[in-house]
Length: 187
Image 1: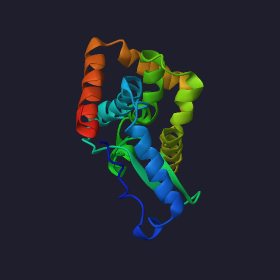
Image 2 (image 1 turned 90 degrees about the vertical axis):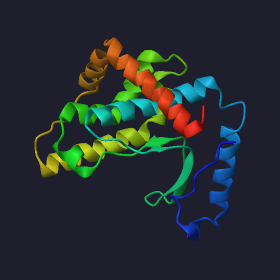
Image 3 (image 1 turned 30 degrees about the vertical axis):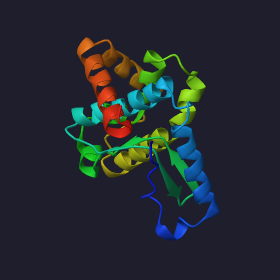
Image 4 (image 1 turned 60 degrees about the vertical axis):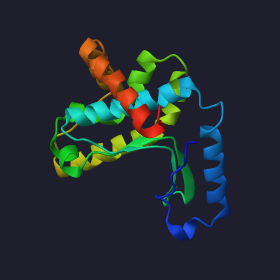
């Protein structure tokens, strides 16, 4: 049985009925037939892409399974299917710009290229957190270092597609997806 982590929600908010409902619904989804091979593949490949680029930047991130957190900006509870620990500040601000940008957004391009389970709109809708993190990084790096320009989606898509043309890169990617599945979901 897959457990939903609630460690990201302050204890005083865990008595909220909306929190309890969110956890129950999330748990029901992950322990039902809806969480099939397709959904597991989508999640694991997406997170593996973050993992591969983080490792390319010299960072070994923690891996997280399904959880619920609280967004203080919107004052709502959020379901998170899984995640990879974000890059440390030093790496985000000093590492190769394109690799850092790919660490944020390449999962979308990888899913578009390698999977046919969902439409482009569905893939991007699920990546709003990644897009928000990318935009925050872009603004922060521009303000602090002034050495970055907004990449067009075409530039990053093409850079990711170049990586995907490499058999060695695809082996690392699928290996990381299997690793993520085993560590997070136990299979």
